[in-house]
Length: 291
Image 1 (cartoon, helix red, strand yellow):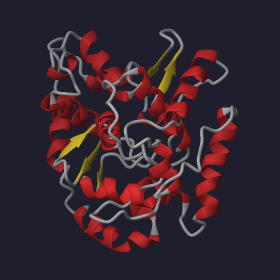
Image 2 (cartoon, rainbow, N blue to C red; image 1 turned 120 degrees about the horizontal axis):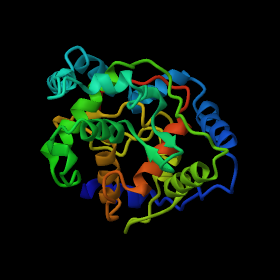
Image 3 (cartoon, rainbow, N blue to C red; image 1 turned 90 degrees about the horizontal axis):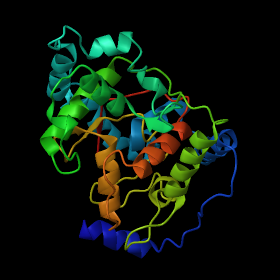
């Protein structure tokens, strides 16, 4: 970690990117995706769903990643998630029943905006509500997910199985931006993405826009912001487990020496909405192996 911080400081990032002026989400999307298409014309659009492995300069990393995906390390966790997904509740229902009834929406539509509650909904939140509605007691329903790894991983494995059923479907967040509250949530996520934070004074955009495709050394290549959410829940090589995108956000905050927010906080939910909307049209690859 110290080596990474030293290298980042040595690069002397002066913050050439600032929070963009107000624009409608559709214009933001065109500009964001257009930036990567113009800068890296050799990369096919769908490849951005594969993280930094999309970059031709990371060919050696990609070869190892392709080999690892012959027998991906996440399979055991995925099997546990499937078993929990298929298990009947005491009332005879299951998580699959909630999908049939529409309480859990198709994975490619998340995050979605719920007009009734005026809130962002992720697959995890709807899965948790499904369990609560059926009076099922599971550790992740009451745990502090930022601290209780076992409970959080159980939720991640369950969600990973759910996403695996939609693998290859193209991202299309179900959000009506004519709703002023939905638009405000989106703008909050955009602001988070472009705003500096922490002792290192870094924004998400520094690593995943300005430095995307660069290798900091020490097994630290940087992915593009485009496609960042399509693989989650994912298993990172150094985590040895499937985990949530909320945990990835928390670790990113820690790496720039900022205080992590709570899992599923309004800040992280808005960030996930913005990031996912910026990846509209890309195929889902979750669960996936990530560096």
